[in-house]
Image 1 (cartoon, rainbow, N blue to C red):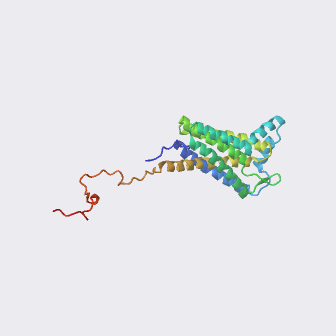
Image 2 (cartoon, one colour):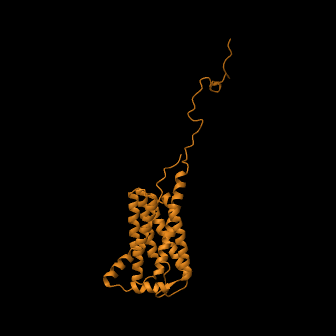
Image 3 (cartoon, rainbow, N blue to C red):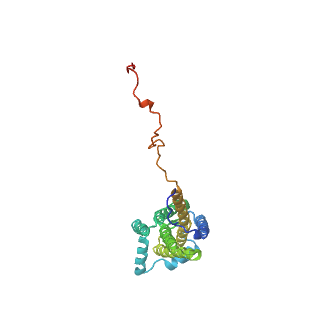
Length: 251
């Protein structure tokens, strides 16, 4: 007897394509990390994009600050709670687990990479890859995977939805980080690629673990084979008879 398995959070039709995308994204993260290891100045591309985006007007700066807040601890926690609540209301427990595990694994990976790469920006702050961008991209990926599963989208539509959602979230947060001078553009690209590499892998692990738990046999109660055994009317009742010891002999 096995438990009932919940719907997969990583649709089978998307596994191959998202797996290939994750591998390519991981390669980009590594290459950029090697190129900008221990650097403290922008590259050529960084300088050009930085000049066009940094120093926006007051109105755009307010928007950038509001977007940046979504990656701060309070804002990020609020988004995670809202996403988990939505998953549970839709009866998608695996997606709820992925919201926490995917966001946690992605942010944890960016934190580790920052220490390994050692790239800094302004006052020695570690900058590569962008954790804010990685977090919001990962959350968008999870939501897109949930929608893909709920609507039973095909491979092409599902893959497009996931990538477009991640790109939109990454572009919005990336713009805010560059506009506020918190990250170089290549930091943003590294954060976005980190989410693309880590989140699908985490989704696959969640499905594997959930399937194993669902397939685990349910233990049955141990029944005593001698209990409730019917009484044999022909059974020897000698043991139950009174002893003849002390009975007087017949005359």
